[in-house]
Length: 434
Image 1 (spheres, rainbow, N blue to C red):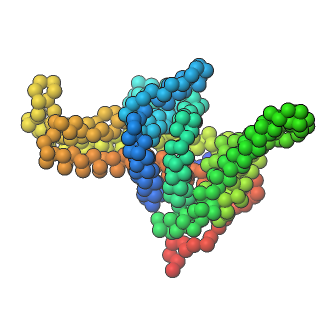
Image 2 (tube, rainbow, N blue to C red):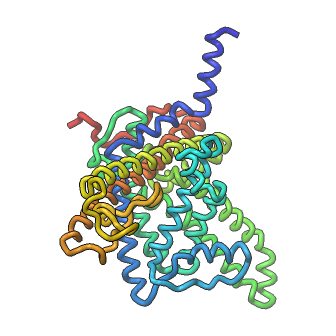
Image 3 (cartoon, rainbow, N blue to C red):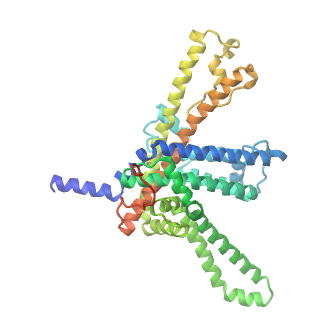
């Protein structure tokens, strides 16, 4: 075989699995406009969850271990008794999901065993207590806990969160679609304008379509169960038409499977095609089911790539914050002078204003009781600025998810319908247009 033929074969193999295009997720996700939109979504979500927690905890809250206890009860088939505490539902759920996401990133990283004993290896091991599927299950358990034991809160918070991320996530997907297809970058205003235009008839309703079908099917099946309670007539009709119940269960199973395998493609479909909610849902469901092996391969490659990128972004952020804190801390206490406290408890002013742990504990609010009134100002603003930096780190992960999902949608569309990767719906102004 000639060298040219070998190169062509290698190029064809790389193109077949979409590796070259999937690797473009990193530069697409690092676009400052997408990071800003993702950060805005995170901040608004925190505000929304905080407001609900303030209302719900007026009569008591839950303990930090609530979801862990719920998972244990599900796995051991025992009764779950929710531990009471002082924390809000969103606070507990957010921390659990954060740990599950970090665990997923660490357990998916392929260099965990190779990097054993190094700083990277130590970081990975702190997130690798469970296998990837175990961490994914933990994320599902968190949602199931809120739905099962805090249903009203789930509906209110979920509706608000879906609206928030439909807008900002839709804008990110739109900018990513143009960026990937045409190598042009929309402004944040153009992305928001497209998201607002297609918010309720597209981005917001697309995930609601399968949920609505599932709920309707469940109600129909439940009514069928009521029919069976009727003596004589119920047994005659219920048994005769039970085939309809089996069909309804099959529909529910397909829709749940569609949510799992194509849920991340709902918004990219609307962003790329300009579709309404139903068409966006239909394509997002049809493409991965038509090419399940390709969809699985894309998902695995993207997951591993995201894990590698996330670890280095997290470690780089930790390094930058550590350097900043060390240098400023030296200025507040050069050569150990001007420390407060005695013995081993002596701390520099920077240490009191900014507690810093490892890569997973980049910030904690200071012990305000150790500060004088004017130090509250510096402590507060230092905290806000550091939290913004941490928020941008998590914004990268959100931007990576939406950008990667958009690229996967374009690849699956090409595989199924033969549509070129550079084809994208255009109905708004592009960069440079008046």
